[in-house]
Amino acid sequence: MAESKLLARNPDVILREEDPDGALLFNPDTNQIRVINATGLFIWKQCDGRKDLPAIVVALKSAFDGVPETEVEGEVRAFVDDMRANGFLGIPTQARK
Image (cartoon, rainbow, N blue to C red; front, side, top):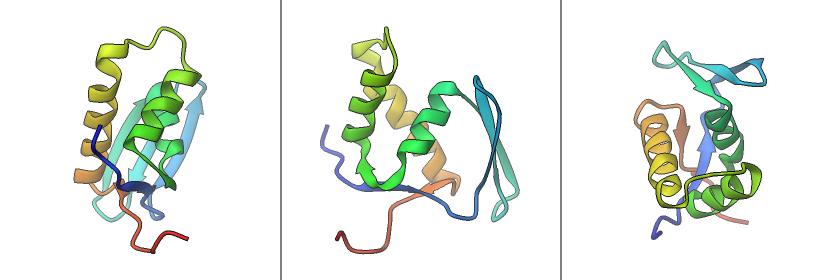
């Protein structure tokens, strides 16, 4: 895993947790809605501006039993890439403190 960019949620995105199994995200900048499952919600919450992709993968493996080792990095990367491409996630512009 060579990714070392910190990931942060777009502060304009609205999170609505529907139940323990998932949530809705609304991006008012693009008028897009995403329905995410419990795993997506966990990843979303990990994108706090202090973690990079490898740290999120480690956290996911620790939090969920039975995570498929060979697939988890690719799945997290695909989720993060989609969220970034559609303005739900970004990279913090502030310097590390």
